[in-house]
Amino acid sequence: MKPFLLLSIRADDAAADNEYVAFLAHAGLGEPGLRRVRLEREPLGALDLDDWSGIFVGGGPFNFSDPAELKSPVQRRVEADLHALLDAVVARDFPFFGACYGVGALGTHQGALIDGRYAEPTGCVQIALTAHGRRDPLLRDLPDVFDAFTGHKEAVSELPGHAVLLATSPACPVQAFRVGSNVYATQFHPELDAVGLCTRIDVYRHAGYFDPERADELKELAHRLEVPHPSAILRAFVARYAVVEGAPALVSRR
Image (cartoon, rainbow, N blue to C red; front, side):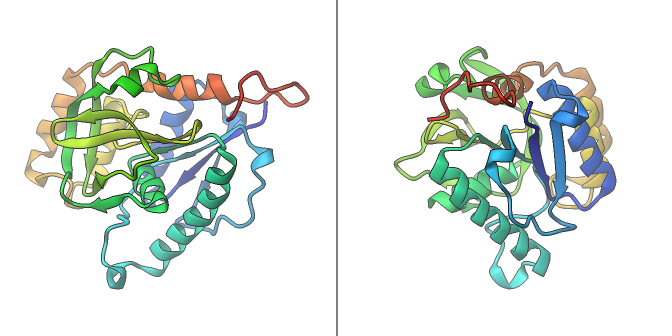
């Protein structure tokens, strides 16, 4: 099988490594099947899409809606790398899945309005599929309403007309969308479980995602909750797009 690629922007090793392990586990992949590039450490460089089954983008502390003068050189370089990658991905309708930060990457590339209007504190929210979401091949086996972990400072306020809204929530109207047939982004984190959420609570305790005094309370709540459904999206993505080298593709990418 051609591997999948995970693009990470988390500078903290604990958060970055937990994210990689979480994508492995919840997408049902072994390490040879998911390669990782930490964009906060190195430029992406030239990428041949034909070498990969699909691409994941994880979350992280950068925000596309940050004022330009406040963005670090690394943040600006990461944004430029992702924009160039998405030029190729969208043109080919190549399998892509962005979680949280990926909404900003894909949304910005496609002309969505990204701002802080629909920010959500770290925690569990109820997600509802739209009519399009209930028919989408990655989401159609999920319940119409399900719980997911989230936490973000920016979100999509307005989608461009060509994007397909797949999921929503009362406090954040754009929780998932698709461009073309194979390019996806979710505001919530389908890779997150209680252990992963607690890791991020520890790492980002003072990063403005939640009241630091509530950290222990949020961690206790995470372990009491059952959030089994979002990870099915990652498994569906892998099942749909995994390419066995030397074999004809079983799923049309267009």
